Length: 179
Image (cartoon, rainbow, N blue to C red; front, top):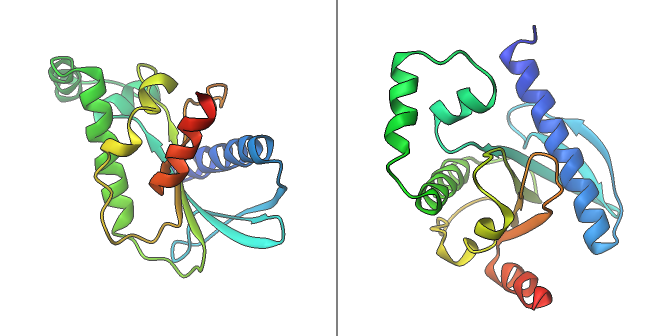
């Protein structure tokens, strides 16, 4: 059985590789050389064309209780109660709250890096690309944060593609291309 740190690193590497593959395909640029960093730097480093790029990786689960369920952890009394209480909220509202909270938490970090993107991989089975594509303009992104861009991998496997979340012109361009 993997330790929680080994599992976290493995999930971060999977998400980074998936993001790099999707980004290369979408924009026709080369991304390569992936390695894991120490805590003072973002989780993963790579090259975008010839420029070093650091990726901070996060997974969107919704709540701690939902994360435990999604990751196959044993669910006990308090966790089960928390999951049941979440069911009273609309899925779209929970999605927006979870994204805002995750971005707000990550925005408080500072990194020893010149170019950092936040990559969020959606791990929640009830949140789909259609809902995720509606969220960028609704997000409460803190005015000060270390991220040049924020991207969302719409599902665990990458089949639903990438959703740009920040900056808004990037997200708006994505929406216009689909029309």
